[in-house]
Length: 617
Image 1 (cartoon, rainbow, N blue to C red):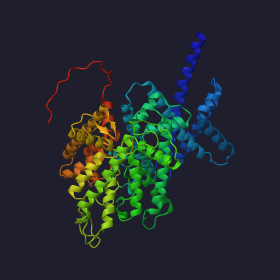
Image 2: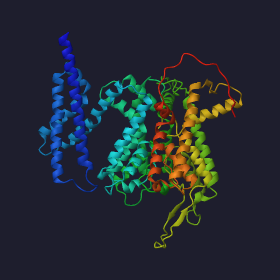
Image 3: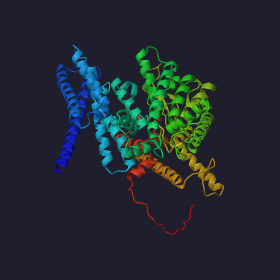
Image 4: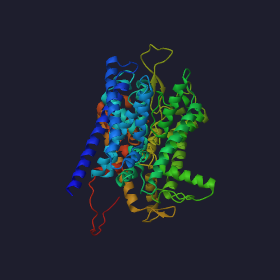
């Protein structure tokens, strides 16, 4: 018995030492990568002294990484099981050794970069999973902290000299941009295409991708790819992130989400490459990078653009408008709805039934039948798009979208296209083909004139109010967008209809909506309105002289993670930027998640007090 206790203590000590070695190795790998690729200003090579230090770090990484992967299987009680669980790690070790033995130059640096990335990402991830399994905390709080962690990483990366062309970025601007990218908002305080270097743009794109899908989705994928199972707590985290009601088929869901994301984004990049009217002088690499960047940005509903004027130069280009709108809508429908639609179409072509992975509550049912959630989301989306297009056209067509008809004359087709695109993009996308607010520019005929010329008055106040409503509603549950969500808005409409019909139950498509869903819906709306009102009040205090409708527009755009602006974002004070940062964060994690994260988990009571009514209205 004493010998067995000694073995257990020895094994625990070995695991703690191994965990410490992995964390140290991850830190050194991260330090080496950042020093090598981000320590100097864009366009400036690193010095010879720095190269020698990085070389010493590389030797340390090689020694520790290979030493760990040689000694650990030898000391393990089941070497075969260890090799199976750590297949990727052992494969990297073999490739690295082969390059070291066969290369005459330092060609092993290329697989070493893969080793650094692996150690920097996977080792801390494994420690994080272990900690999450032991720490007692509610899942909404963990979801909130996951987004906060991504934002902090983005902040640190944007502060690197290589991230910007100038080599210097204010901390508050870096935090604002990191939050806007992670929360897939798209509000900017600097010109994305001109201010950030290619490295900074790549960091921005990674934040958009991870923020759009959620850190928990990638964590689950890493667990499966590395041959490790998904624990119950980890599945609950992913369920909360994706708005799924239970665990059935979760592995299949994760594979579908990532596969669909990259397939749609690749198809979108391909379509954008051949449809966008690129300015003269664009190289092949620049066109490919532009297409990939904007495809990911559109699918994740982030609204970041490498052009200062977003898509306004392609306002009349119908193919581009269709491609961008399709990416935005697909990303905004939600992965649950997309899975159900894809399964339904597959069944229609194959003419056979297959069982899907979810329940009535998530909108996924047996193939050939759309669940209530899917029907509500699709119908609500179509109605909002059609109504938004009609109202924008009705208001803006007579006034030429605020442009001077003598300088910019939009035809009926161009007005309809612009109306449709603004209706689509207001649903948390953030791209724009027309000016939202007034725009002034210096006249080309008299460049020395100090008074800028009014180019456009922007959208009418009525249109801006309409866009505010659409932004507040936002995308659908489980999607890359924000807002109170289409299903929540539809539920409120169903409640009103039921009350008008003097019915207590909310019945939709021959199904009764549970009372807890209705209660959650009202909580979402009330908290959302509270956040918007508080943020608007704070912004009117910090930004004296700003137009109220512009302030409200900015706040709702931040909360709905949209990214549209009347033009006041760049001129916000530090306090105003912090207010928008908090609003974007709350809008991304969701009002209900925020309330659950702040709440104290209590055991359900086994008793109820007598009822007594109060006067309403």
